[in-house]
Length: 251
Ligand code: URA
Image (cartoon, rainbow, N blue to C red; front, side, top):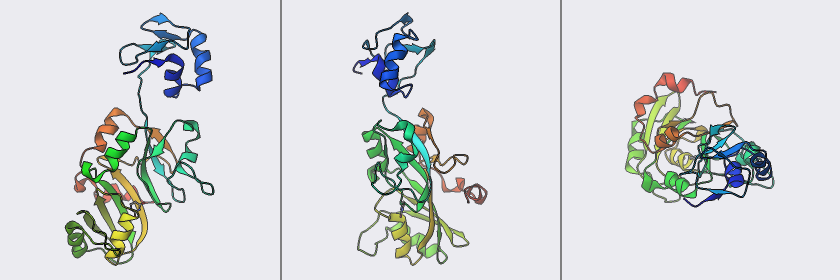
């Protein structure tokens, strides 16, 4: 890995702004491989050298990944002249190159991943990676076995677009679960509409095996751990989403 200035390393890690990081280093709070380092311009390779702040070793991450419980009414974008965006909900991370991985509609809530890692984002979004996105929908009408079969064959949308095979599990009471590997514009809404079951409410519950955390309040976010990141690329068995589990995601 290329070497990086100490002050940049601290600010990249979100410890302080670049200017504050310079002051932190100059104040003698930072060591490199156990030796005091007071020069913010000192270059280090964080994969080989141990940088410590106040005696505690820092775990450097080249990129950052977050889980947000996207609230309803917020636009999935980095900026918008008129409307509040998901980035507006993360003011502490402003200017760090963070962007949303894929998109949830303004009137969809639930799990949204944000990162500054373009390659990772592409891997999550690309249908070729087969990363499943799980949605919970309340619809008009009652989804049934015929809908499940149509989803499994690869639905053709109203405009002629053919979707990859997807999974629909009817839950009764005009509710269903939908799993897709694609992220076409308004995909789940358009798929259900194509079956005459327009969506009334839509929430993303999981990506791969990474589930929306139940105690993450709407609009709140947290950094993902290495274990979380591994879960993104795992398949989750549908049985996991038992009725009891689902009830706890209801508003
Ligand atoms: N499909 C939709 O229709 N909307 C979303 O927000 C996500 C998937």
